[in-house]
Length: 96
Image (tube, rainbow, N blue to C red; front, top):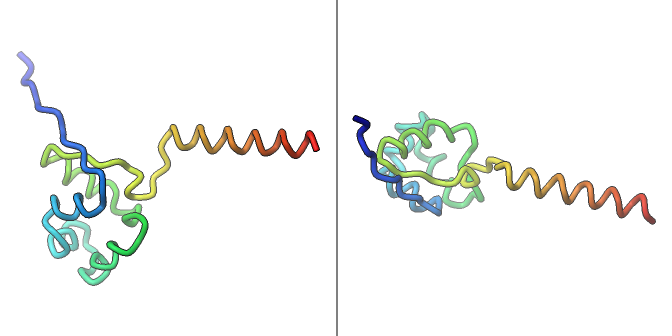
């Protein structure tokens, strides 16, 4: 019989991710980044993409999740929108 696992809770901001992973020093230990660098992530638009997997799995172990966009990842929906915009721009250029 399969064990039912509760749904993961979605974190929506970088601040929530940092809090749930324990703060600056624990995240630095988790990622191998210098804590001073981790501290500056608050001012950046996204987390460094190179730490996506390690932070994703740490959140998953806590039954948490966060959108990949917090690490600057392009999701299929964004890619489709970007391609549509590019095609539309090309059509407009050809029409003029």
